Image (tube, rainbow over all chains, first blue to last red; front, side):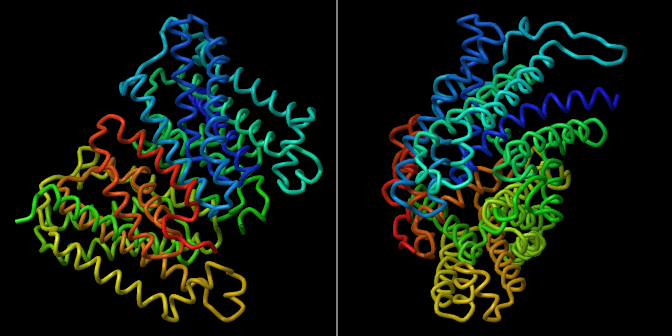
Length: 292
Length: 269
């Protein structure tokens, strides 16, 4: 029973981790809480669903299409709603307000084009469950875990081994110094948005698979949980965000299994508040972010 | 007799001004909060339970709701002593979410099905009387010792501490006072809406209050007031667009932030 719950928790947590990594990448380069990231994730889920239904792209095809679509949306958000404010050197919170506006627009457009009802992926795609003794694992759960791990590994490789990835980390370290060192920071920021949003889009499809219910309003809840996971891991830290996501997923599933399902959305935050009181910078976070 | 539609816009503007000012208070001391919907919920539920379930008179219930929200605000304010900026924003977001889930499961106030049968006690005169008192209070606060202490904390915490300001006391007090005002706004809202359920006080509500303060002008109580009015009236003006209303509203928010990144009447600091 406990092991089953842990497995379910890790599946759920790996999708939270993907969302949290997106937040943390963007926070890293711009010190910005991208409050429309949950909506980008939702768009990814819908695009993946429509690709699966009308283009019959299969599981992996729809994930790839969702990643591309979400990355495009993320880049658009940066160019249209964030870059102009940065250029004008506004209040530090002005870009955040702007992302709230973007969130409203994306949610409304999704309601308009995809309808306000919950829809699900074709059940044939989910497949029959496998049994290992008392454990039950669906093929889809393996896909979720496999894709999440693969994406995180790819990201790790990208930021540690490739030149662009290292430029991204340098930009996160210091925008101004990277710029003077000849890194095209504007391009790097765009790239960061594309990568972060793409991960969000992939998470959207994976969540669509696991809950089999996607709606234009799913972005808020998932977005808040992703933020919590980012905070738990420490702002701006990719590995912290991944771990934070997994922890929140496991805790959520365990709390539903052993305590009460009606409080599932609150448990993550009880943990967050506990962590903030003991270790405000999160698990891997650097101290200076807390003070700033 | 005043047109009911106009009256409702005026009442909602007033309530929103109270809510915006309630968040402006902690923000003016550098304490950002994205969980003000939670304090509003506490005030709304507390006062509505008093009038609708226990038959208490309106005004004492309203005060009780505000006091309750203020007490919770003092508790939430303590973590705020150690953390700042984005951390505080996410902490308060978590608080708002916990409050919503709490009321979603709290049977005495109707849990998910909400609390109805609230007496319609909120009047236009009362709302704007409170708004007037608050505006006068904020006007006085600006030039007072406390107001300057708050500005000092916002601008440089370390320097403020060095010149002998008791950071902990001021921060908790300001946060609690803001929460109490939020609770007051919630109580007024409940007795005008006549039906409340947890979904009305979710993240979107906290975000709305946050937007009102920053839209009008950061670091200025008149900005928060203007922001609340714009935020209430703009969706009504856009009503003719019907289904595209919220899309345009969101876009306008982005455009406003691009054109006036310091808020409508905000001054560059």
